[in-house]
Length: 528
Image (cartoon, rainbow, N blue to C red; front, side, top):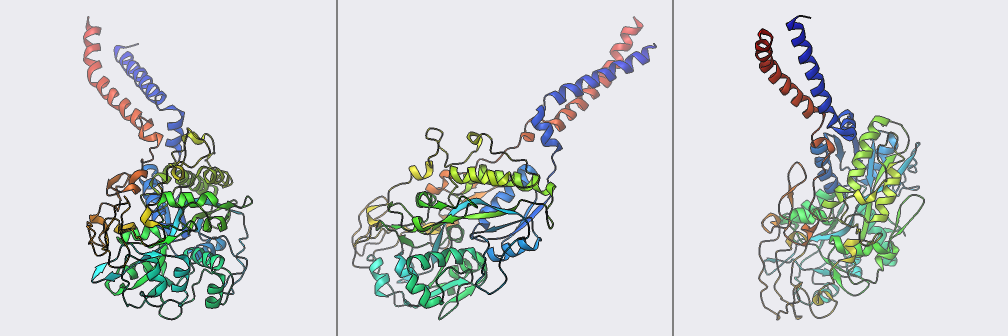
């Protein structure tokens, strides 16, 4: 064997050893991850859940290299797209309807499906109201008042029923403009379900029906807008003064506008924060056959921390290969769904939602396992980074257990808290009525005193309440109030550690060093 041949063989052996050592450091998990490719998936449906979905889609795109396309077309449209097989998944606040109110054919998918809970939240009442030229940020409304507003029974802001809810405000003589959804909407269905259960006579006299509807009747001075962005956008404009709409709490946060505190069964006016929704859903009943929600107990929950219009949203996932859905897409869908149930819930509160509790996460994983091609397992939920889980007290909802008690001025009576809500949390409202004021901290205020508040309604970005995330889902700014307690911890894949590609790069670098250094050294040795 010539010296040159020995040199080439030595370099080859060293290269092979380097590659083997690098591969050994990747571990089986990283090797599997490197081999995983994610086929793009698409879905349509709910705008109620869209703010959360959009954030989660950005997170997995950055961390997984995964493409999840989603269009907020409304829950009714999403369910129809799923039945038609034109999407891989749909999102809705209500299940398929056997007798749609528009007279269309029953919603019966030809192939298997399952409902998977994805996020909880409160249907809120965002409004734009001024007294003496100054924006109101602390409006309170009872359930009967809300129902009469949206059934055209109460048409002016100085109505005695509204005034009774707001002793600290001298309600203005101004027409009310209810803003409702023009499209088939899960938000409409949830709101009308609540009215049909709590105030059936008022609702049936207005709508001509006894149950829920996804298509809100447009009557009187009501304005109809498409999507959650449409109704929130109308209310937030200058021409929207005097308007009120029903929309997911998240949209009021993003718009920088307040929402009404709603009177619960215990006699307290409560804002739909993540803790108040978590408390309310402790009384939700779950249909064991399909995980659909029964909310009667939520509406009448006696806990004084409860927000009564609380619910959660579903992702409708396929349990059979059909339409455009394939088993390869099932790998993507199951991974995305697993992320939502665990790590994604860390951002729920900051985005204006409430994270799912343990029982719904457990049930959700059972549904994910039914997706063709699923790579998710329920496994060890102690590794599921969900903010409601409490290792010290398994089975409890940590968020609900730690939910604060309402302030004394939030109780029905002559006092009214002056502190703002939702996107106007940094804006207080002066006492202009006959009642006394107060704040979330319980500080008293005399009638006519001007409550000091920072910021202006409609400019949430200046109050520090609107969270801003980077492409990895990390909090960049905002979220300075209690809502920021659930700040996202970006989901980091194993491939972000030292993996296969890094090992190959290291091997190539070492080989280059060997090629440069070994020949002169070996040449001198051979000469000797």
